[in-house]
Each structure stands twice: as structure tokens, then as C-alpha cells.
Amino acid sequence: EMARGYHERTALISYRVFFSFIGALLTAVIGFTVFFPPGDAYPNGMLNAASYPAFGVFVGVLATATMLWSVYSTRSTIPHLAGPRADPEATHPALGFITVFRTLRYRSFRILFFTTVLFMTMAGVTQTLIIYVGTYLFGFEPKHIGLLAIAPVIGIMLGPSVARRLSRTYDKKRTMAITIVIGSLIAFSPQLLYLSGVLESMSLHARIAFVFAAHGVSQGFFIAYIIMIDSMLTDTIDEHELRTGRREEGLYFAARSLATKASTGVGSFVAGVALDIIRFPQGANPGDVPIEALTKLAVFAGPVSMLLMMLTIAISKNYPLSQEKHAEIMKGIDDARPAAT
Image 1 (cartoon, helix red, strand yellow):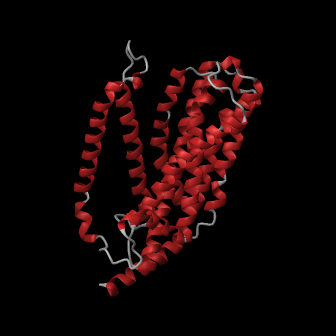
Image 2 (cartoon, one colour):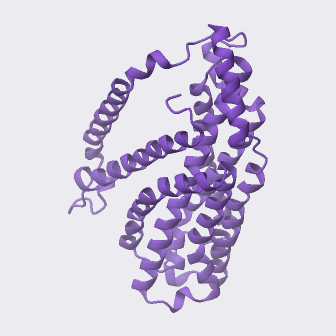
Image 3 (tube, rainbow, N blue to C red):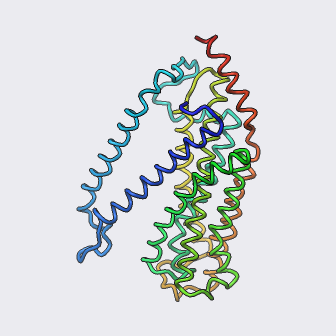
């Protein structure tokens, strides 16, 4: 509601996603360095149970302060927001979980919902397999894999700019397709080079640099993809207001959050099932894994995952709201508001 313009909304959401990723990254860095440092008793500081209460207090205070600051800083917009209206279909609050799925009745949101489910499922698969891929395919040590956790900084800096520039040149739906294709090609290029034999011919330092760059740059395009999903989501909320006279951002973002969290967990489950299917040995040393198992891991974590990631285009291509259609929706909302008042 703070940004009604088609492109201004994308810019605003870019800032939100940027600070969301920055906050998560800083919290992780502070956690590892301040609260969970390695020591003689616990070389892996994450295993020190005594550190968790202090870390929990830190995160709780930080989250509370951030939310209260956000509420205080945006209080001036309250008089300009649409007032609540009665919902004749509202159910008991205890049935709120069911209410969330009411959003799926609208085709535009249904498309975004299932696009998010598939994308986040594959993101969960990739995150789960990164240790296996890094250790067994790329020959990385734990310190090298830990270095990859810093790579998203590149994406955080790159993503908002990519989203804004592409969405002003193309429509949002096409921008989604562009970012997912480019992001997937870059993200899974190390696995493709492994299958072609090129990666093994590189020195360890060259491999680390290449994988680090691929991980960081691809995250930029994936972050841009997430920005476009949320920007398009707010457009569907406008469509909902035009049809019902009510603004229900909370309902729609609750459904979007449900899709994100649930599908990320499903992605971890799918990755585990895939490892069982290819019969990848558990707890094996890198040099002891049969070449057949390594090849199957590379195929699943490379071209198969890449194609499944790109499959989101088949779903999102049916999204019906263009910039022109959204302009008509906003005009209809503006025309209806005086009559409703």
C-alpha cells in the first residue's frame, strides 16, 4: 500500500528483500563469531549447548527492536491506508489455517503460489546437497564449504539492481523467466563442468574461485526472482481488493510464507530421498565413493535440478496481470473508493 506504482512497488520490495538477506547474513556471522566460536572443548562451536541461551536473547532483542522500529517509522502512513471491511466469508480465528487457502481461488495468486512451491522446493534440495556436492564432487574441505556461505553477499548487492533494471525493460513475468534461466545456468554450471571433466582439470584454488563466483552471482538472479514474486504478489492483492473491496495483505503473505517454509522442508526431504535412490554411501570418505555414485549425484544436483528449477517458467507463464492490466485494476479501485466512502 505504501507504493502504488507498478515499478515503484518493485523498488520498495527490493529494499525489503535486501535488508532481509543482510539481516539474516549478519545474524549468522555474529552468531558464529561471537556466540559459537571454536574452542578446545568444542572445535565446532555450534555443539556448545551453553551458548544457545545468550544467542537466543540476542536474536530476540534484535528482532523485537527491528519490528518496533519498523512500526514506529511507518506510523505516518496509517491515515492513508484503506480501512478494514467486514468479510462475510470469515471463519472462526481457530480456522485461520483454512482461511489462508481461500487465496487459491484466484488464478493469479494460485500461479504465484505453486511457482513459489516449486522454486523453494528446489532451493531446499540445493541447500541440502551443497555439503555432498562440495565435498565429493568439488573436493572441498569444510573450511572451503564454509567460505561459500559468504558468497551470497555478491547476490545481495546484485539482486535488487537486477530486478529493477530488468522489470523496467521487460514486464514482471518475463523478468521472472530471465532471472530463473540465467540464475540456474550459472548456479549449476560447476556440476555441468564436473560432468564434462573440465572442473577436475582445474587447480583447487581455481575451483574454489569459480564455484564461489557462480554461487554468488547466481544468488543475485535468484534474489531478483524472489523480488519479482513479491512484487507480483502485491499486484494480485490489488486485484483482490477490486473484486471484494477488502485489502488483505496479511492473508496473502501468510499463504506465501506457508508455501515458502513448507516447500523448503519438502526440498530437504526430496534431497534425502534422492540420495537413497542413487544409493549414495553414508559417511564415506571422498576417495571411497564409487564413480557411479558420484556421477548420479552430479546428474541429479546438476542438470536434473536445473531443469526442475526452470520448470517454474511453465507455471508462471500463465500469470495474467500485465502492467496495463494492473493500471486498469488501480483505476477501478480509485473509482470505487469514493463511492464506498
